[in-house]
Length: 158
Image (tube, rainbow, N blue to C red; front, side):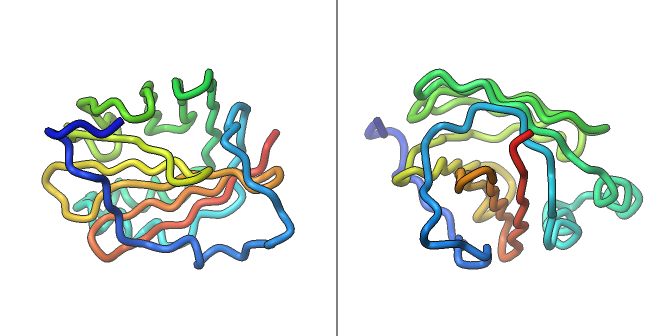
């Protein structure tokens, strides 16, 4: 639940950029191991985050595996890559997120449900910063936003 101290989360962006099949059902169950299939506009997203050129070129070449252990609204997420990042959170409980590796910043984060979509708003140095993540069929879709740049990632369940 959002407290009076927390602002109602907002994130500009749209799920419409994904080719969605209206017949595919969504679910809140995000458990599993997910392997990246596509990573659109990642380089521009990294530039919006002020990631240096060399690090950005390396990051664009990586194929990620995301492991999600979900128990209701409690999540433990591990992303396997050179710039690995682990994230543990409980939905609707604000926390300090220390982004290691690639971004290397500390932000105030709040993850909420928007229907069957997880939405995270990250407050810090960057405007309109955060992500949305949801499951459609055997795909995990993630939309990461920083400023006016939106990166779309698609993962397939392993």
